[in-house]
Length: 114
Length: 112
Image 1 (tube, rainbow over the protein chains, first blue to last red):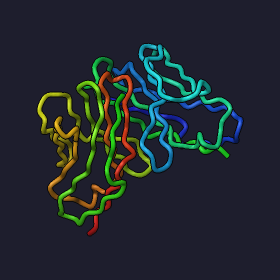
Image 2 (cartoon, each protein chain N blue to C red):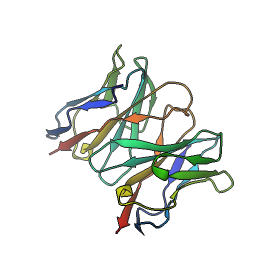
Image 3 (cartoon, rainbow over the protein chains, first blue to last red):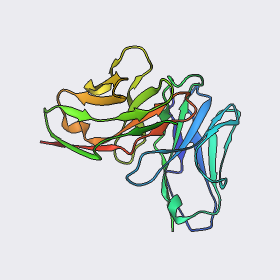
Image 4 (cartoon, one colour):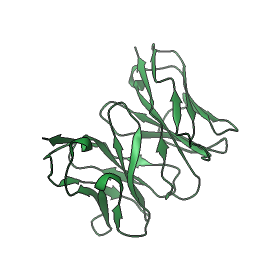
């Protein structure tokens, strides 16, 4: 069974640029969530996708957007990068349904904005 | 609204001593509660979860947590700390599964 994978592992961008981060969910999981984890902080929920539709969104501006594909892989896109976007971006997959289903996390993508 | 508060951003224990990491939650409906561990430069790994069955939950690596509704707490314990337990620990809450709220984390140091 393949776990959650993310690419790239590290990324350096400059302010104002755009970035796309990718995530492959664990086999059999059709729900993907994205989190931003700033240094020394807990993960902050960005949004969740279920069957290619957004299924919940945290307090992030519209320049954070996402996609989920028919194979349940997902992308996180961030436009007009700001210095404060520097963080570890985590993807988590899960089975749908109740909150009893835990989320399985990938290793993350470390984004640095200069 | 839901949230979790982790008291103590840093906890140090001696090897072999009791580990106690505190988590208090806020939720208007019965919550699902989780403890995750994060090692440096890695993602989060589930330690245990509370899903309204038994209030005392046993997890991996000898960890357990007790759900106390009257205290709105879900503290994580381990009877005897091991050097390999040194990591960052996060408590999380959800009630629907479509949005998880994490605490700010507790960094555990184990002193030999």
